[in-house]
Image (cartoon, rainbow, N blue to C red):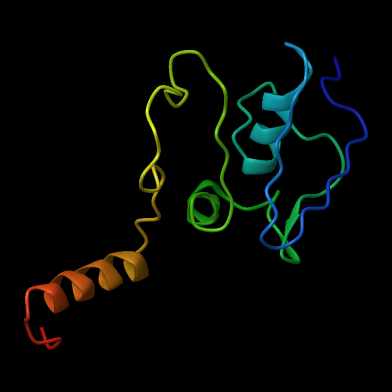
Length: 119
């Protein structure tokens, strides 16, 4: 069975893609394929996925984890796990907790407290 056939997307730096369609219109399947989240027996039978020129569809799980959240991400519309539209967003809900992000946050905190930048 083929769930998605012959899809091509080109999203430029800084652009955001929103996918809409009826239930069963393969939005989630497409997103999960791009993010490397397909579970067996799902698979990408042909083609490639590139991000900023880097091929990401053949990365192992550990390498893909570094890509997800820091270079690419998705918000899936699932009834029990989606964002609550009743809450106003004042700060980013999804944050990047990479070592560089954590280091910047620690430095900002130390600066606010008047502490030296030396650890």
